[in-house]
Image (cartoon, rainbow, N blue to C red; front, side):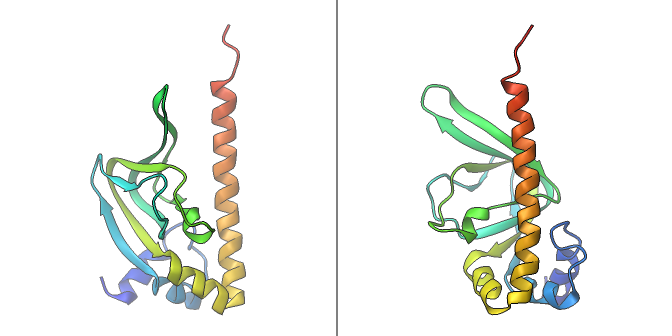
Length: 155
């Protein structure tokens, strides 16, 4: 996919939708398409976090392993979700696993490239960081509601 068609596809993702064209073009310089087959891991806990992912299609399970309970799915994410915030924050290590529960297509944004662009263009950096903060806030709200359900007294 050439850079121009990548930018056209990228701007359809909810994290990018509505960004000024110059910001989309700037961001697309860090992006590539990835495909994750069902059952395959996108990343593993403790490994280097090198990319931020914007899911286009499919579903991924965010998992942690507990020695006594085995694998626990924290959340399942899908189209228009973002994951991989660890690629932007030291120590740049994954805190969980991400496994495809169905074939998944995503944009992979190179973390090093993205961090450089965020620093190089303060306007872009502010704009993109605000969008990421909204995504993180929504994710925390979903996890909070899930925890309320898990720990709800059963009658």
